[in-house]
Image 1 (tube, rainbow, N blue to C red):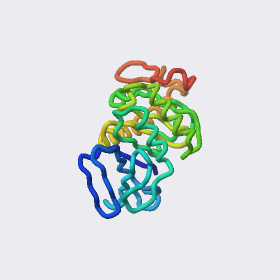
Image 2 (cartoon, rainbow, N blue to C red):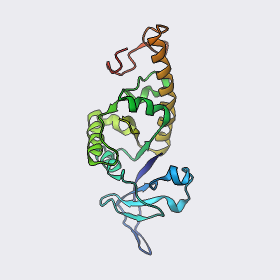
Image 3 (cartoon, helix red, strand yellow):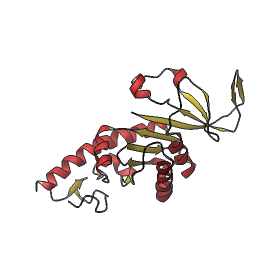
Image 4 (cartoon, rainbow, N blue to C red):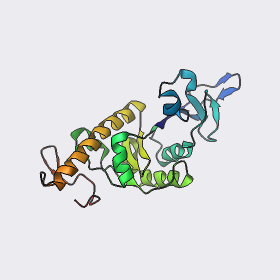
Length: 212
């Protein structure tokens, strides 16, 4: 489950029936609500929604707008370089998110996203959660343009400059989530002396979250 949006700036004015696109204005291209549950993420082009960025109004597309739209918009407000927001209920990462734990970052390919922090809990679809996401992205500064947060008991939120890179971050962090879990077990069993990454010991960039 989850939802994806991409922020685009219209390069031309288009009037097509009831749809009016204005040159220079920003729009979100977004998946509809329940895309996984109802459609198994296999969407037709007509099901991709067009949303007025300023008003949050759906202006085209078959389906209904997700109630997570406020979280997406707050992510874009946090950093103008963010052009894609990808929210997923990714299985391996969900373990860390539901446990309220920062995820140890132990694989080489995930180093670029930095610490994989879990944000404070707030109920899904609420303004409180959207505000927490905004605050978290502002705190990481320019790193927000290619970043991932764990949403406590909810999933992950990825911000990126492109949809392709956001998908890459999700895939690699899912592998990292599984490996970090296995390393944690080995540490508890006394088979590893702390987290290991790139041939050396590391704190996993979790800053004492796990107390192992």
